[in-house]
Amino acid sequence: MLHRARLFQKYAVLLVSLVGGALLVSGALSLYFSYQETRAALLVLEHEKAQSAAVRIDQFVREIERQLGWTTFPQFGEGSSAIELRRLDLVKLLRQVPAIMEASYIDGNGLEQVRLSRLALDVIGASRDRSGDASFIQAGKSGTYFGPVYFRKDSEPYMSIASRAGRGSGVTAVEVNLKFIWDVITQIRIGKTGLAYVVDRNGALIAHPDISLVLRKTDMSVLPQVKAALSASFIELGRSVEDDARDSSGRKVLTAYARIEPLGWTVFVEQLQEEALAPLYISMLRSAMVLLAGLLLAVLASLLLARRLMRPINALREGAAAIGAGELGHRIDLVTGDELQELGEQFNKMGADLSASYSQLEQKVQERTAELQKEQRRSQSLLHNMLPVEIAAELSLTGHVRPVRYESVTILFTDFSGFTQAASAMPADRMVAELNEIFASFDDITEHFGVEKIKTIGDAYMAVAGLPVPCADHAQRCIRAGLALVEFLDRRNATAAFKWSVRVGIHSGPVVAGIVGRKKYAFDIWGDTVNIASRMESSGQVGRVNVSAYTYDLACNEFDCEYRGKIAAKGKGEIDMYFVIGPK
Image (tube, rainbow, N blue to C red; front, side):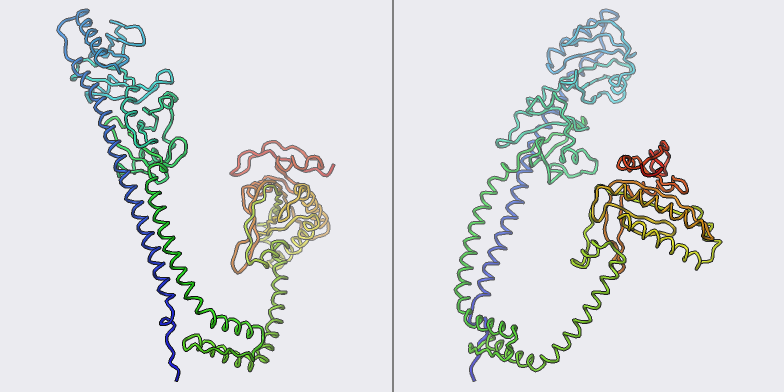
């Protein structure tokens, strides 16, 4: 008996696949971890830079606070002598701290006795009442007050700082020009594009290497990283608060930040991702080239081994094609001593079995085909009764219907007045018969005028023109149909035992149309246009066609209308409405 070896023992295709897969997985993992480690290292560096800047800015503000401290000590002297001593203290303060643009001394009663300024005239002994200023009140509570950032003359950023030695003593209040923080920020560089900037607790830009952005009072809170960093929910410090962090030009950046307490300021350090990750991208490119070379070697090896499989595989393919084409007597002669030979023998056996049962199978196929065609015709007939022709065709062809937005259609709503009382007084079978007769006539009327019926809900009837096939005269179609519905009921009421009164409302606008349901399909439309059309009906009068201003604009050239004014519609406010009198 011929020994049949396993296919794996003869060919090494699986080994090549495993080698290639291992190379891909190893390379992908290496690239992933390299990316994560590089990004984490960059964020740590940026965080250290941000913390360093925050410390220096904090020291800048604390130094001003310290300088204010000695100006609040009690002075020996009274009256003009004490005021002169205070003036000399403030002169010395302005000389020692160039960032202070204006300094004031407010006595314990809240009266400003001295104000020195680099930008305006000095004021001595004016006793201006500043007891209501936040500087005086907050400094009296906590000893030191740091005011919010503001922009003098809508350009330069300033902050108020006030200090008080103790309860009942005077307060020294200064106005600090924050442009001096610019020196700290401009010294922070990471690569070619890295920079730092400072925002206040509301996200307003305080310091930036581009001073023009500060002078324009740029709002940085619109940036994802600033918005998230300022939010109370963010806890982890020193990392980008958004993976999608971007600079003011919309470019992706790596960013970290540090807080400055108690000012409530935040220092951000950022660098363009394309620059920060450039070395990593080069490394990734090299790794990708090595991977590609390994994959090419694996593919070449697999191709060489696959050539040895081509002869038996071609024989099997040709045999399968012959059997599939109906040559059930075709036989595959293959001697390889492995699974391929077994497969060829299975094909031969299958051909013999198929030949034996072919006649019975053909008969069953014909019978089943006839049944399917019958069911298909029945399904199509049902769909055409339930759905618009175009929608039914799409559903039959693809198995589903895409929701479609139509920018301009017109919706017709009708409702019977007094239906609830009639329903309670009329036998159920009579009520259903009445509605069936009326709605059947409504269907004929809307179809005649090219209006598509959507549905009935109780005694309400809804139809639309302009979908699924768009048309330019959808408003005119619905108005003609609405007038015809009213005229039909008037004629019917003249001879019918029970009199029906109908309100008709029409509105135009955009809607979304689609199919809902899985087993029972229903074609429906949605949108605010539907709601307003319903309000047109409920706000109308019996026997009248009530249209919105939008529908009136579309059809006023063909119909005479009576302006009703602004009518309150439930949930929609006041809406301009018109009664249609008739065609011009």
